[in-house]
Amino acid sequence: MLWLLTIPGALALIIVILLLRAAAFRPAVIEPVEIEEAGVDAVQAASRLARMISCMTVSSRDASLVDSGEFEKFRGLLPELYPNVHNACEMENIGPSGILYKLRGRSDAAPVILMSHYDVVPADEPAWDKPAFEGILENGVLWGRGALDTKGTLCGIMEAAESLIGTGFVPENDLYFAFSGDEEIAGETAPAMVDEFLRRGVNPSMVLDEGGAVVEGVFPGVTKPIALIGVAEKGMMDVELSITGRGGHAAYPPPHTPVGVLSRAVTRVENKPFKTKLTPPVAAMFDILGRHSTFVYRLVFANIRIFLPILGAMFRKRGGELNAMLRTTCAFTMMEGGNASNVIPPAAKVTANLRLIGGETMESALERLKSLADDPDVVFSVIHGSDPSRVSSTDGGMWDTLAGAISQTWPGTLVSPYLMFACSDSRHYCRISDRVYRFSAMALTHEERAAVHGHNERIAVENLAGTIQFYTRLIRRC
Image 1 (cartoon, helix red, strand yellow):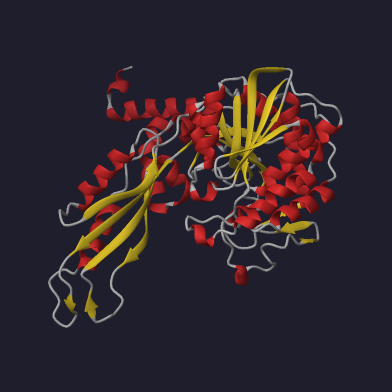
Image 2: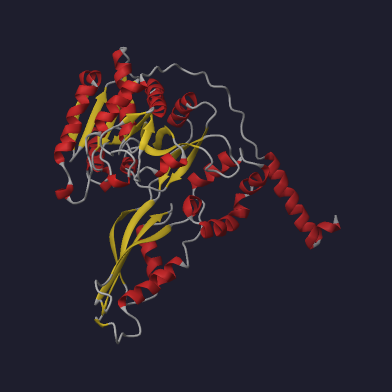
């Protein structure tokens, strides 16, 4: 045994331990799922979604750019499209744009809230292959802004409820359908709705909003489709870096212009990214999905604490989603200086968008930016933001209910928690529930995901059918 005291012997022992851990890092046996029928007339549903898309509910922080008539048109359309829901549910408007339905169940002990939003981002229509707001249904595909984000999921909720109510269905617990019309601008509707739930003493057993989807090819070494459910959101903060100085003629510049000083600050920040951190949602995702990966990747994920520094360095160079999972990110997105090439501007500014990892705060991230920039002439101003959300529980209960509905709708799909990078209305609901989940009930390709907030947003009728079937199965279980 003296060989263990040598450096090569110790290294050999470590390697053996790592390999043994990887060999034992296997997935649990997945029991076959009995599929409950959930009949859907997807073509008719798509025609109703097309009418929703034709409402140009484009939100903007500039009220002069908002066509309030289109929002009223959308709200007036729902009773026409879903009469069963309107006859059976209590409906009210809350906040600037909220639509809240309540379907009474046999009990109010464990209510469930299903969320969506009906406002959309603008569309650069000349860049689209089809008009963005006509709801064109062609060759089994429905085109239009909001088809995925998130009139599609709103349609899925309403279609499922309409059909179930028509059969005389009564849920076990109260069901709420909470729709906002200002999510894309981080508006006041969702906070107002949560305030109202608090006032009424509603303590949801689950809140479900947009988020992950059923995807493929996103996790190293895993070939099966994966349903990613967001159990937490990163925080978000917009920070303005500005500097003022003496302007003048560009023919005889000072050693450093305002633009140059800010550029130096930006470079310093970009060259030293925030530290790698393994948060609970990402650790859980690595543990669940890593077990389904190839042996080399299992070696890494089975020993993640050892390999984390290496992964952090690799992902830092590559950027993208894997990097964003492991650290606070900072992206400089806007810059403003002068408006003439031969004039040194008296002031300049840049805007940074940060996405804060769990455990980080707006205050701590701002202090780090100031430290990295290391320039007393640069002024930092927080425009707006929010800290990371709390992490929702994945321990049985409604998590299993949600996972069961997914497994029935997309058999063979792996279900995993993940950390959501974007901000949604659901973060406000963490005030009233520790089970706030983020899952857009669709199977989406990389191209389809890229169309969210991009060009040519569209949904296949077959995909919409899956969304409706998912909500039908979920509502039955609530």
